Image (tube, rainbow, N blue to C red; front, side, top):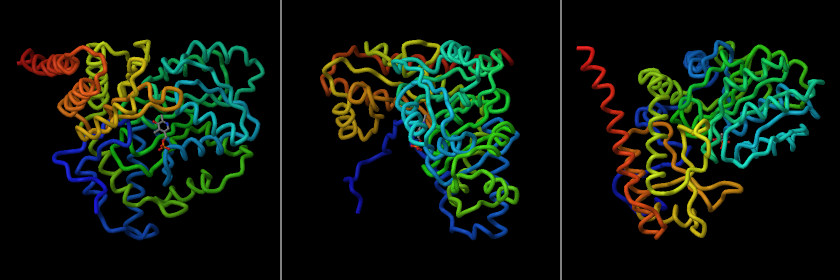
Length: 403
Ligand SMILES: *Cc1c(COP(=O)(O)O)cnc(C)c1O
């Protein structure tokens, strides 16, 4: 029996991951399990291992683990580094904080560039710290591409340029768990050594897959790493993946889903997918500003196209607000995490979404503000609607001009 009374229509899953799963992907997953050492699996394995490289914009290997994104963090660290190594991390929010805690637990020495969670990883601050490191003690620079807790995004190409300008040999690790397939990411062009991701956000899949896209430099570093590892060991993955197989039982049905998700992203066109996320981020921020509320990200340079984190006026509990919206409108909004718990709510606009889904979500938030008695101005949803309509007119104008 369901643990929820029947409610009509679709549940609005407006958290920044897991995201709604398209029916086509659900159907692809709904298949009998096959022998993961047999010839039919081998075809699937070879196909997805090759095809998945496109979304990372890499020609190198992408390892796929049956794990959550957190496993992808661990795999990157234990394969390329050694106990006691210094790593430079930037405090963008709760996910950066958890990654740092993991580094500490593993016996690394993370150095945290502290921040107020209201900007993404700042290239200038990273440059200043790397410049001091003339002895090259920092072995890796770890950056969260889209900080899902604070709704900020980092300029990865700029950070790469900073590392290159200084000629610093550190590896460059990027957490792309909530940015892959939502924000442009160029693993090879931006010289990323390990790109870490997961299945349940931009890729529109259920949770359960972790990814490590690697570079030649990362594979070289793995040869001299002194961390103990077994499940995460890349050499076992490399040997098995060469034939389309895995060292242990893979998440077979999620790979069926991945196969179709990658097709869907290519059919829509990556650039269209990225533009859609940027548009929805802008529409959401316009709504927030019209309500007279504050977006947590304080510098437009770092605005996230994936999630908007909204500060509620002091004295208003964001978790009580989210509970009211869930109860009344069957919509899940993202909770504030870590040091902003209870103070913010997060509106996810990531994955399989469209203008009208977003309008439904923003209408639900606006009605919720009214019901909860949170001081605000009306007209946020209208402001978003106006912007989306204006954007929708653009391609039509281009078509008319071309005729
Ligand atoms: C979701 C997320 C993670 C953690 O992924 P899990 O699958 O929950 O382990 C890590 N980093 C970022 C930026 C995320 O959004």
